[in-house]
Image (cartoon, rainbow, N blue to C red):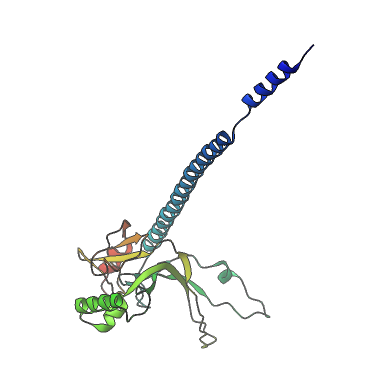
Length: 268
């Protein structure tokens, strides 16, 4: 029996069921396009998630700083003997607050160790906006000279113009303890206290002080103001709005100082 026709039919069926090179290339192109589209949307979703997490950390930092400032400023007081109270400018504030002495001040010293200085229940707190130069590159280029001249014409002072060409970079905090003087010694030891960087996610901080119903940008002290307005921002002061108000979103809170009413009503 001749089996040639059956063999030839089987070969034709096998060749007809196979993919051509064009079909394979088309499938690879489609799969590559689908994979690229999926990777693009995945990267977009990952970037959006990172932006949300960073924004949440910035908002959380602003809220924590405002809560801490509110707690400490509500404990601010005026010390009539030391002539210390509250003083500050537009981007820094320093105030005296009541606090419990540290645990070390309650310990009794033995003969081998020097006696501890009696620590009072006061803390001198300072918040300050750390700044960096606003000008980028050489100060002799056209853009920097134009900006410097514009600031000088607005302020009328060259030194004030150079000081104004700064933008916020971070927020520092310094805490000092007030020690009473020992009767047995007159030695004074200088102690250097380094500032603590509490956040570098907030680039803008401004204070205003309530003075007889009027908000002012500076408070010479040492008397206590009625209230303090604190404004925090994520973005720094840019060159475009250097001579204008801050136009970005701010976190603002007005803090009332309870001790100001009684301290300002006392006659020296």
